[in-house]
Length: 271
Image 1: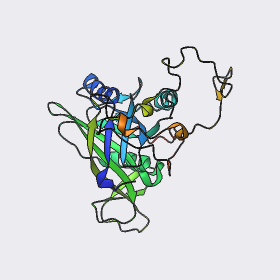
Image 2 (image 1 turned 120 degrees about the vertical axis):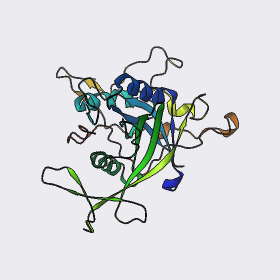
Image 3 (image 1 turned 90 degrees about the horizontal axis):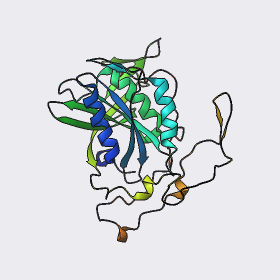
């Protein structure tokens, strides 16, 4: 994994367009979404899909609440339709005016997502429409000591993160934001096609047979094997057959949280 300062996030046209569409559709209120994709060994984060916040979300001028039940449901079918299961990379949300820094409420959400991916952290985006659409992306990680600007946190009795100024408890959580480059794969020549391959591709087989791996039961629950990324199916792209600016990496296989379900602890609700 490269240094945090070298991280780049690459969006598919589909994912980037979804952010613009959602931002404009809910304007001038706040809204947001969930970023799904891959983390490559080179430090590139590939955003393949962006999930909407859900029909029961609460949209306001200064905050919004996700429809947590909807997002928890939708993340599984979207992530598992790809040959290499997508991972939860982080979040994005809109801020009013030109405010492109995070609030203390945002910090509490971001640190939770950063800790889910262990040492890899998470990515978090802020959208502004001032007056044109503008997306600012940050890498977020939790550290104990750093020379970079950090914010310290402790947890109150209700389980929420409070912003604490000049609190020197050595066990305090420290959150570090690093602004990262945003690239959109406008011409579909950057992200290797094998990272976008569908599990059941009609180009290869229009009439696949169902697998015995998953069985649907009458109580609307499924019994299936643990969902893990199919990294063994990912091959390094052949550079000779692809443009020079195309990514040449596999998804990072180390320290990745392979549970793609959201934790149902309520920290998604307000952002």
